[in-house]
Amino acid sequence: MNVKIERLPLLRVATVRAYGPYEKSGPEAWQMLTPWIARHNILTAKTMFLGFCHDDPNITASGRIRYDAAVTLPEGFIPDDFVHTVEVPSLEYAVTVHKGPYATLSHVWASLFWDWLPGSSRRPADAPLMEQYLSDPYLDSEEDLVTRLYLPLTTI
Image 1 (cartoon, rainbow, N blue to C red):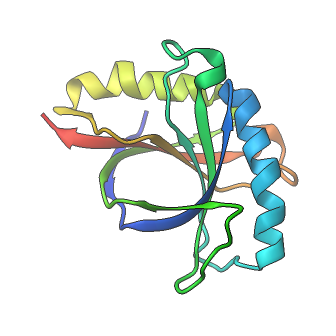
Image 2 (image 1 turned 90 degrees about the vertical axis):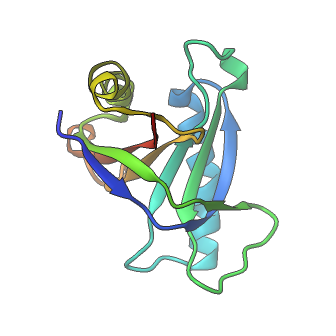
């Protein structure tokens, strides 16, 4: 696994939350957010499509698992009340890239936590896990989906 440490700048995003297992809540949240994005014509060359995974499904009850679909907002854009506006703080992240189906992302997260993290002299920060979706799941095959995974870090 190739892991790099990166610091992201503060990000201002619009989010929509869904509850349930990630394989269910992820698509539900995007089905709500995607039409909003299209209605507001906010896409630029710098737009990032992000997902925030707030809970560990191994210890959180299925119906309480929180997933936020998110899109970065252009400077000066003021969203309506359909979305929540969130400022994601500038943090250091362990970053790796996954190519393949979204259904296999949990294996990559497990490898980051169980294989990479113990030898890293870092620990997870108190922030949600973040995924950046670099492909279009409506146009690209599952095997060609590219996702950047961001594990928020703090020092020990």
